[in-house]
Amino acid sequence: MKIGIIIQTEPCGYQDFGTAYQVAIAALEKGHEVQVFLLDESVIAAQKKVKMVGERQVNKMIRDLTDRKVRIVTCGACCMFRGITSDMLVEGAEMGGLTDLAEIIQWADRILNLGH
Amino acid sequence: MKKVLIIITKAPYGTSAAAEGFRAAIGIAGMDVDTTIVLTDDAVFAALKGQNPEALGMKALSEVIESAKEYGARTLVDSESLRKRGIEKDELVNVEIIDTEGLADLVHEVDAAIRF
Image (cartoon, rainbow over all chains, first blue to last red; front, side, top):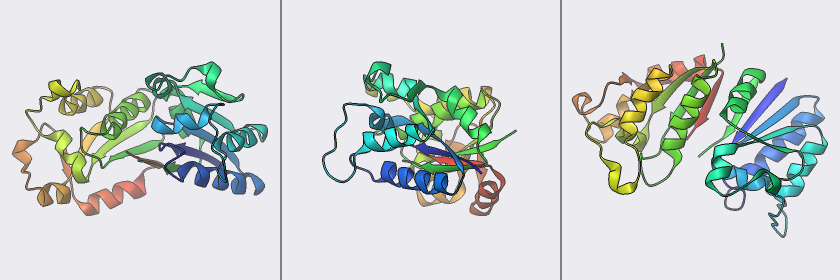
């Protein structure tokens, strides 16, 4: 099955990113395909300089997913609003837009939304 | 064509959630996704006539409802949320009202629901 995950909350205050990561890994291990769209505050998670010391190391999770060929796309306008440029993103994470969100919706058999 | 429901639950101003919900709806509706917006809880205030959020530097979301319609995304408002807030239909801009049962049917009908 093709699973699209849309996250909207920021990764420090909310558990959603970690939940999405665990769901993605579990799905990949069962042979499903996963794509992730980072919308609104969640784009913060894709920055390479984010360093959360302790248990939830968000950029490690991002790298782990991109290493496993998971497509991770950020909302470009959401990045721009927050001063995030493409050179600030973890390698493998794409700067995208709502066109990519529409594509992921069309691609996926199932959408999982960790929303506001 | 994939069907998506954008569920907006947050008040129109104070957080970016409602505005982002409309932005995402317009973005995907323009990309061949059958998009419906539903306003529930405090988001129903977004459909009130006579909004003037100029002092907030925001565009009135009641006008964005019209723009969304031009892109093919219609907006529905939850009757129960209106009732709890003492809002009558004649206080609203041109939107459709949906009851809880109708909303439940809609959730079953769509391929994905994204919450703002």
